[in-house]
View (cartoon, rainbow, N blue to C red):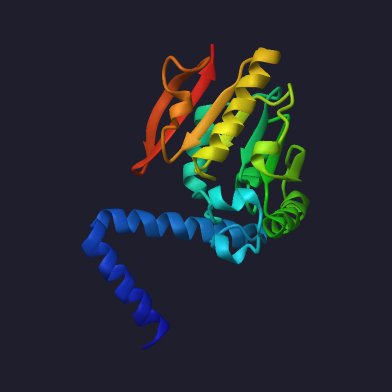
Length: 226
């Protein structure tokens, strides 16, 4: 069976399972993401399973493999965030750096990636170098460290989560964010995509839900300090 026949059968099954419209939308989103990589000479599109990252740490039990956010979805999120030159964005579970690359073209003071996989950090560093040579971007940093161990800086204001890890690590990271706010009160935003974290439910935090939407059916929330 040829590769074309294989993909044709996959698409047919997807149409039966999800409908023609949803299948077409997914194909267009994937095509746009592949085009982004080819246009800029970077590698952010291809998924990597957790078992292929060759990691053996405590956090591995609570982590997920690499799966990037679609370019169009990220653009919508960044438009909703409305960043300023005073904002510093932190992407937890930054992977190959797609969020960093695209965000760096927006008016952030700086964008920072936090990623525990050496392999993904290496790929991200190469992507940043390649992308920065061709585009006007703000400073980009990548920290290869477990998210729960990352120390929140008082200049950091926007925290981005694309469903990067399981509950135990997420709780630790959000507690670190809350502690930073208590120590250095400031305007802060938490952006969460794919589920509503109970740590940010109404009444349990200084953060208030200000945006509750979807990205082609994918839940998307923004929480802000008041």
